[in-house]
Length: 397
Image (cartoon, rainbow, N blue to C red; front, side):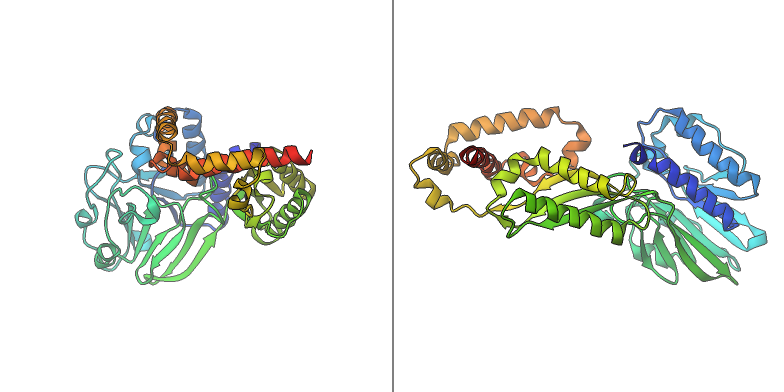
């Protein structure tokens, strides 16, 4: 969808416009402008153009390169406008804004894998100035992020700075006040693991004290997981009605006038479990139709996941003298069938080998994750539910 594909650039354009409207004194960017393997110089030219907009109105930018920037060809080869000041990578550097009584301390990444704590190398605070530390760090692996430039919150607080502007972690959070230690997060969610509002922080300082702290939200699309209980649904039409209601409620309460990119998650114990598994394409089409009926720019359904549980009595089903009963008996024996388990292991290993490295590291599907870790019970149960659905659908047709 074009709105999703262009969202990050539009959000950045919005942020620059907000900075100009607010007449900010300067802008801090704490790393990861570019994906490391990104070679499209149009992205770099877009960034330079936006920096030029700030330069025309006298706004300086203090830029620190993070792990992705350190391996980027764009970072190494593209010159930046004069109003952009880049923190050095060999040692920490300091920029002084004497007219504002502000100093900024920071160190860019020289390479992708910075594994040492950089904080002890940062200079002592300058007396009589508002000291800002700029750092790209996972702060001890916060939020599951790779632990680049590891340090602790105590390390930052003990440094004696007035404010820490942190980058790398995508979820915005204020970790400490007085001094403020802040991850503003990224300015636009890119996928379902980056849900909710995304933005930046506008900080007003008076007499070396933070007078006002405001969140800016330049994002143009927001991601949301929509859990939908389908318990007591007698027909798939009932499920579709609940999905439509969930989308309408989410657009009203979470979108804030932006496009809402949703993942529908059907939950609960239901006799429709098996049928839902074999009807996912139809259900996804119905969900997207429901989203379009609200408004073309209101919601977009990224995916529909069936995470329900069967209400089927497997023991009773295994006693049936028909195809469903035979299937249940076969499934009951599958877990102890060494030949079947061995074949599953070989097939899964081959599939995993072909997956891109980033997908292998970040598998969301719990069934696939369990299988990758050598536990095939969930996979066998999932296949069984799918086959049950096929049989039940055949009985009803």
